[in-house]
Figure 1 (cartoon, rainbow, N blue to C red):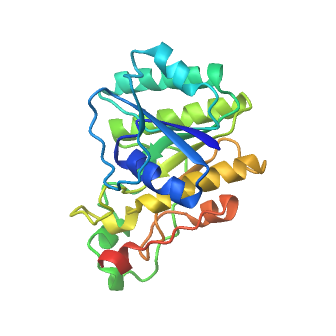
Figure 2: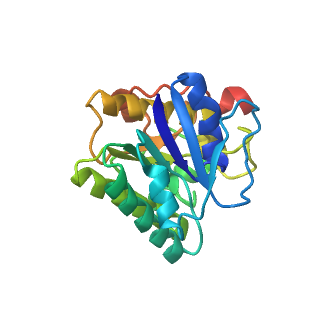
Figure 3: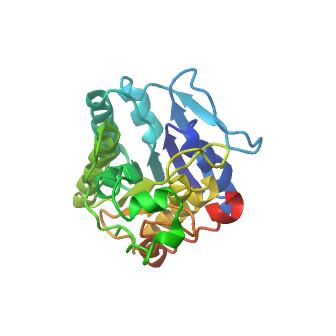
Amino acid sequence: MINTLLIGGKGTIGSGLRTYLPKLDKEYRLTSIDLPGAVDKASDPLAQRDFIECDVSLDDETLRQALNGRDLVVYLARKDPLSDMNAMTDKVFNAIIDVCPQAVVIGSSSVHSTGGAYFPFDKEPYSTIADRRFADLPQWPEPLSVMTEPCPSGDYGMEKAYVEAWCHRLCAAGQDAVAARWGGINDINGKKDEVAYFTVWCHQEDSARFVDCCFRTSRAGRLRAGAHYYVISNNTYNIFDIETTKNEIGYEPIYDAESMYG
């Protein structure tokens, strides 16, 4: 059994993990800890629904009880404003270090942590890509490396960069932790009318494949300490480096925004 805790598991990413991780391996046993009354975004009737109601920013005792004995912890919760979000992150990661130092930890970051490298798509070649004028590009840009250091362009990116820093701290203490720079994940796995959304789109099943690969690579003793990976589907018009993710942890995304929605 892979004893897994999703912190913020009723949301968009968590609902996908609860749906698809058990389909990848029936050994996953997932518990979700989330706010009392939080809406469950999972639509699949087979999605695991073992819930603990708790505001982890306030109830440290329940959080620590929930962390006890976990093999895998995925931190997905968020709140506003930035100061409150970072305080919650401090509380969660300190509890992880104290209670389950043996667990593999995946911290929820985002492509927005490096948004300053490409956002708001107002410079070349990204403005041409955002307009989907692909024929006007003489050469496709080199994908943004997973080694790109955080360069957030707003508070949302700053909170994600803070999570990445905490993942580094866990690794410095000897614990396997990875920051997932999630792409555009939504609960219906559909397209959105947003600039360049097909470029950042990620299917929920691919996000689950990423988590599973991280766990397997850690248990094999090969997880790169403090890694942060872009988690994007295998999109035709991708600007992010997922080849490193494939090579280092065996990530195999199976969806492409163009073939599904183009």
